Length: 175
Image (cartoon, rainbow, N blue to C red; front, side, top):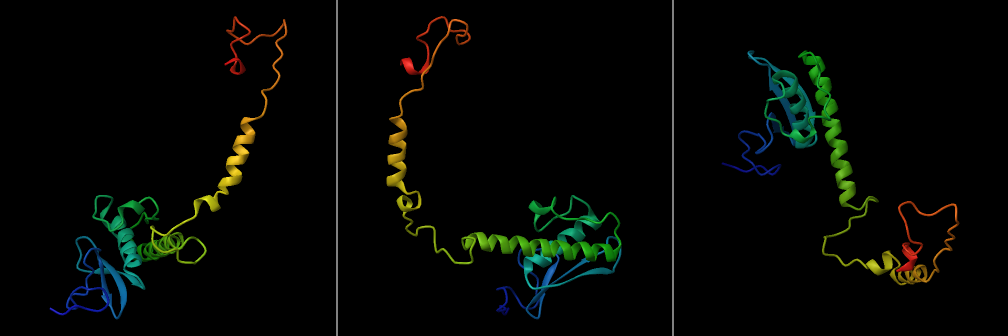
């Protein structure tokens, strides 16, 4: 068996090794689903990534087979807009929306991995000067100054005393 350069799986089938309902065609990913109790299939589209095609398949599977079907991304089930009717046009439209949702999710995930500004951050073992980030010397000085503040004046008058307090000594500053 030969191995393709576009995914590391046998070229004879073109199927993805983990995602259901998709296959590779000319470097892109296509998704389709067989209608229950019919020989016909619903074409869900051609997508640039396997994840987008798999998300399109998930929506179609939910629309045609219900919530008990095997999904590629079960964690996204609440994010998908599943058509109420199993009409092929509605399913294709919802599949396209799911693919775009997956594309946006992956872009956002990539942005977070790069640090939010498009600059790659390297691995997790990279040195980060936390003292400079948090301005530690000035932070510690500020905390020490805060501890040197004298307590507020607490005047107890005859008409007011703290509830449940029988002694004038039971307050925070008496310890």
